[in-house]
Image (cartoon, rainbow, N blue to C red; front, side, top):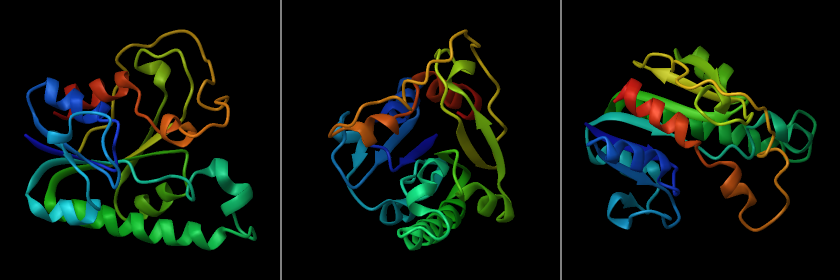
Length: 192
């Protein structure tokens, strides 16, 4: 199957699909930390119309939409206008992906985008890394179009909040947004 992982530079999800034999590509505005032959360093909205995709998985930037950013982007806060721009862009991305793919998933942490996507017809599911082999917590949402909900694959003990406790640093945003490998593998098995 031809798969596009939009807004992903780590290639964790892309590599998981490639390892299973799929024709998968990542796409981001920055260079990949993975194989550049499988990466479009372009705007995802320019890449989506290049092909008919079997599956598109989107990881749009959550900075302005994550509930954890309400003190900066929430109602009445000075950066609230950025939240509205992010929501509008993400809804356009969602609609475009559905036009060019048989199935679409959009991943974000606990975010204000999900009520909007529900109204646009998406099924919304939340998962935790500890249901997929990682002893950590990070509430992660998936909006789904023509896809089943993910079923836990490896429930483990431990509820470390490593992501929430990450210290400041130049790669903090990048590292916090990285997909857990157990979740990526579940996507491959259950959606691939």
